[in-house]
Amino acid sequence: MTPDAAAATAPPREAATSENPLREGSVTLRAADPCTIVVFGASGDLTRRKLLPALFQLSREKLLHPKSAIVGFARRPLSDQEFRDASHPPDHDPATPKHEWQRFAASLYYRQGSFERVEDYAALRAFLEELDRERGTPGNRIFYLATPPDAYPLILEGLRAAGMVTPADDPLRWTRVIIEKPFGHDLASARALNAQVHASFDERQVFRIDHYLGKETVQNILVLRLGNGIFEPLWNNRYVDHVQISVAEAVGVEGRANYFERSGVLRDMLQNHMLQLLTLTAMEPPARFEADAVRDEKVKVLRALAPLRPDQVSERTVRAQYAAGAVAGGAVPGYREEPGVNPRSATETFLAAKFEVDNWRWAGVPFYLRSGKRLAKRATEITIVFRHPPYALFRSAGCEALEANVLRLRIQPDEGISLSFGSKSPGQSLHIDPVRMDFNYLTSFGADPPEAYERLLLDCNLGDSTLFARRDEVELAWEHVDAIASAWEAGGPEMNSYAAGTWGPAEADQMLERDGRHWYRL
Ligand code: BG6
Image 1 (spheres, rainbow, N blue to C red):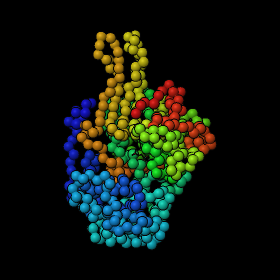
Image 2 (image 1 turned 30 degrees about the vertical axis):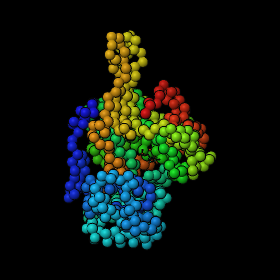
Image 3 (image 1 turned 135 degrees about the vertical axis):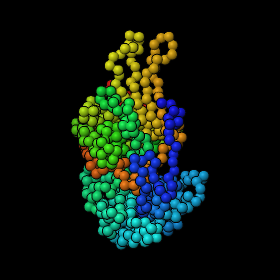
Image 4 (image 1 turned 60 degrees about the vertical axis):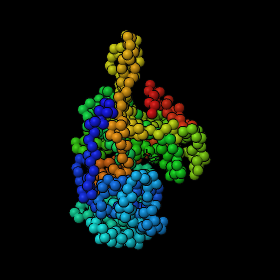
């Protein structure tokens, strides 16, 4: 596929009107209802860096209903005006017309309050009702929990006690809650949190965020597989040798040592983003493209994933910490020297794991996962490595070891898909060299994919939970994480080390070498 050919067939983007906001390309073109979005933790980093810019973008694209309002709620005392000023996106495009920001800013409000105090929820409720009267909104609410996770139970209880959660089948208005990760610290705490969520919310009202699901390239995994005739017939153990899922980051802990020390890559990345990528890659086609049909299939993959027994963990997982090194030409300290990190920390900043999906389609196909901080570069990729042809026809002509066909789904950056295959190189003798067919989002569609949070906030407003994790999904993912965590706590495998700016510890390479394979360069 040439970029030009794809660009020529890409349909023009169609703008929604302010009277009838719609999501182009969606299965059901529905207008987003007017609603009030209450952001708990409004003075935090996530709100400033991700949520408000995403909401502003939705407002610019007229995908938020013009009557909708956003109410920040946090401990810090701020006036509406101060909140509006603080919400101005730092990397605001100077070409954005001023009136667009002004219109959005006029829909922002702020309430100061404590997550513990019952009276503050009562006051918030009264304020939201007053806002409904003023703006003509019908009482629809999204409560966004963007606080540290220890505040979730307090907020959930505060909302329940103040009577702010309407029943799921209320015909006049709806209430939804968005819960940020981490959703629990292990299976037991995730179950306890789910129990508390369900004390007042029905599953249809709960939107557990995994921002990877909002990434355009992640949504495209299913489109590539199931919207085309040529890939799915190959998507199984007859043709696929193995799958690699790599989530490499060049950044370190970025001032989040306090959180990261308790989570490590296992809880921070594998429990959510990486297992989500695995389930989308491995799941069966759902009967319908609907939230529960899609999530049922993802859950089946998590059930088919063989939990690692304690004796397998040493052989099938690698954990490591970065030592001092260089990233992008600059010297960086080792993990244990980072501010806020215990100098004797036992938290992993890298992990590699080998999983098997025990089902008809994938029996015998290993899924190798790896993720780390302070690696050589930022790159997320799903690499499908195909089997060699059944007979080495060209061996007699001296072509011994042909490279495997590899389909690479580049999730980020440089978003795209490429397929490599062998081709005769020009000349009188037979030489076969690997070549690549490339699709790139930017060149084909003329724009970078939108931010994940835009899509997820819009979907929640539309009541579509396809791209959110369901209760059983989250709990099953924790079961796999707990199996690894408890074997690690019991001692094995040992913590390895890698220099910052490299591709991780030698032990991760050796894990694949033992299987006669290697990691593909990102
Ligand atoms: C977050 C993790 O969920 O995802 C971070 O907590 C990580 O540690 C981030 O850096 C990666 O997200 P992205 O979108 O930059 O790949």
